[in-house]
Image 1 (cartoon, helix red, strand yellow):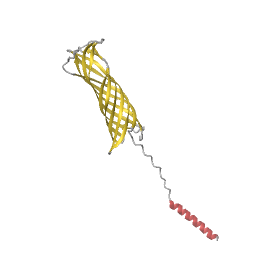
Image 2: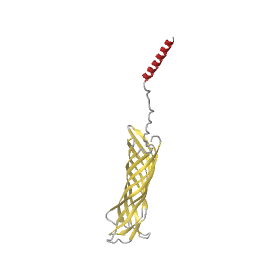
Image 3: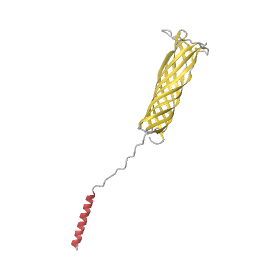
Image 4: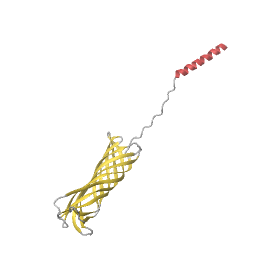
Length: 259
């Protein structure tokens, strides 16, 4: 009897060892990696940055009687830099196989875009320093997502710019005369169109980099020349102003879903 019990015990031990060996190593399964959030342009944003600009204008002088004081339009302009802050809201949607973005925008520029203003009053040439020192704009943009992280778009809308007052000096070589006329500062109404790129940086959720070219037209406005140091009108000038800028900003989107 003892022999039979010993044999059964040995057989059970051998069977258990064989079963454990047959099972092999237990497989280990990793938890699935969470998918990265997809960049989204739906939501509102704020941003800031800077850039450079060119000012160009065509001018023509008139007498107090309203008759041309110069037979031709003179061209002048300037250049400089500016800082900008702004914000807006966008909405991303699908149009067939295209991912589109539409939105509203607003920004304010504090600028130092300046140059020489040429004038020809009577038979004498004059010049003065004029500066665009601030501007603001409101408008809209519509764009297409070239990739999930790169937006290309067109923009347009209304803009207003402030130009500094300036004095006109007779250009007599080699020493210019003292100022003889002055023009007051003022705001100009205009419109703008632009085109830009916006890229999702991926460093911080919602952080994007925007670069935009913008052309602004402020139309033709008639200003009054005053005798220097007085309020006595001495003539008029018509000027048509254009401004071109390239701006680059960091933008933070408060996205509603996505990155």
